[in-house]
Image 1 (tube, protein in one colour):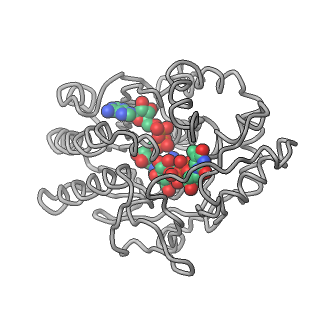
Image 2 (cartoon, protein in one colour; image 1 turned 90 degrees about the vertical axis):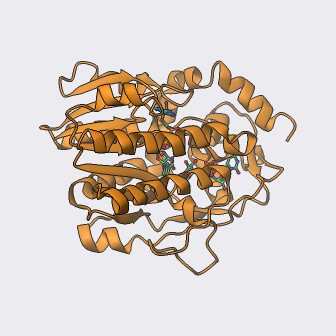
Length: 334
Ligand code: NAD
Ligand code: DAU
């Protein structure tokens, strides 16, 4: 099978490429990535000599570049996105361009190239904040609250429309919060681990009681693999690990693992429109494919802390340049 993977130099995409190449030796991968601030070829440096893997630098909004690179692909897996909620609150333009227009460009190119399957990597955030005691299923109403979530919701609608209007074979995943190796240190877990290792303050938004369902990235990649190979066309699949934690619980666990005092926690001004709780019901993927997460939060977070400890130079390089300005803008006067 020939896979055209977009955004494969980012966090989940790079873990997915490594997963596919180790689990499906007959598969060939073209990784098509613009290399934004979040894309890092270092995430895939161990695959440079793999004859089943090649990289093309390109933008999913550039139809002719996509047409050139997609030729011969059996399936498209669209990870490419602007993915950070705080950045979307600062400025939404790139989120609309890449997440919405870019997805439509890919759908058009996939149809023209007669690709057999289009897998859209969406997010549980399209359903918005979930009331205490309830769980969102794949049929819950879409109610995105941040510009990021709104752009991912719009993309889902265009994917669905391509299925209904043109009969394109599409499947969509909605994963909960991923964590693990190679996550850019603007997101909660890598940011807090990196700060703790350097004895910096840990900026917790609001009261710290917002909850997220934490999913180890390798478990997410196994689920995406199953949806790619076994998913029913036109269907959405939630991916969640039933591991809800408050942000405060997460941060305290990280500090204990790193061996630093809880006094490093500092409460800062809340995120605008901050979703209180994400909680999806993964019953469909559990019952249809027998998927369940292999990592508990405790085992996954211990692995993640070890990885960040052992890869401080990766973090240092990711945090250089533009990231320093971003950090100052986001947290300087908060
Ligand atoms: P990331 O920000 O780490 O990586 C995004 C990648 O997309 C980068 O390599 C970047 O260079 C590339 N990219 C951005 N714009 C592009 C463009 N115009 N053309 C080509 N490449 C472009 O993101 P991530 O956390 O790995 O998320 C991957 C996907 O999974 C996203 O679609 C995101 O919405 C979705 N998702 C993420 C999570 C999570 O917890 N991280 C959970 C659910 C869904
Ligand atoms: O649910 C899936 C989504 O998870 C993905 O679609 C997004 O791409 C991904 O970024 C993530 O979104 P969140 O907004 O939930 O993740 P983030 O790591 O930014 O924040 C997690 C929680 O931690 C959230 O409640 C905000 C809080 N937070 C975050 C940061 C960066 C803090 O308290 N302090 C921080 O410095």
